[in-house]
Length: 406
Image (cartoon, rainbow, N blue to C red; front, side, top):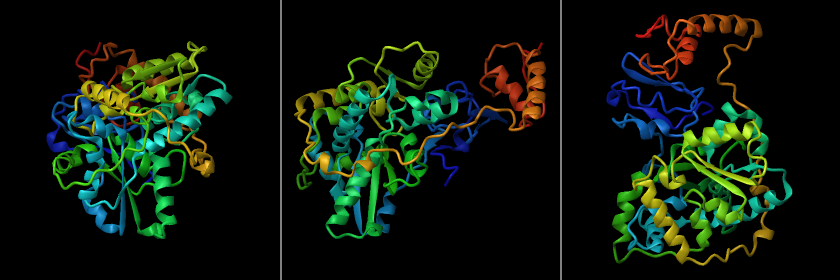
């Protein structure tokens, strides 16, 4: 499980076009023998390669509905992004109720946890040195670990809403007399990064969530049940701001971080993180980063266009009450909001752990690089000339194969 990655390659659909190679922020993809290969040690599961692939050869690894049979009591945790997937005439109350028709015993709306997490983040903004970086997108956390380790100290050490929702849902079920081992917590995810966040958490030993299903896999059945007259409706309990977390900018609005920056799309996120690293944003309090364009509504495991879904979420949120149902938050065990473990940097770009060997490889790399044109065209199957030279030095290819070699 320690090497779990949720982005998978379906080799039969890959034609080696290299579209995925150039979009990966950590240079984790190569094309060899006309097939893409994902370097799992570098992959952050951001899903950029899923969106770029014209042949749908990349897919997210999720659980399936058969896993419900392994638990006596099943609780669904739908991400707020799900409410942006349906036409305006599909009531959110019926979307929630559809999960009961699908076989779940209970639905715990993750948007209610967004309301609680918003209050905890707001406390951090007041008390902590700035700028703080949102830790809500697990792909961004892993990107910072790999490429911007000096920014780990800037991350807000508050658990993501899905993890808080999982803990609260389990606690309430246990209080009603259920055994923990009989309870199955199923998160309904918009993206592969959140699958990895459950299967391989970075700030805790084990997630409170048992399984992860995708919005795209459940969409058809939810739509069917939402349109059936006998489907039960469930009351919305979160505020409009809680549901607004599904779109980029919604989190900042919910936490009241008005001296803030919102950035979405992994390419833009890397640029902004680089600027933070060199101190170019000293007067910003809060930076909200999302790997996907539009935020979670733009995840690879949803069905709707992210720009349309973003508008749908905004309009739904504006119609709802923004009085946060936070009565009782002071009675909660506040440890459920805090990270259990310190996040460590990930060494993904070093040539060798032995300094002498690394220096020798570095010299060889520069020698090879001097013979390459520096076009970074990707024709060799590597994202850059430097990455191609590095692959040779590390022994993953036996010869350079640049068609423009000097």
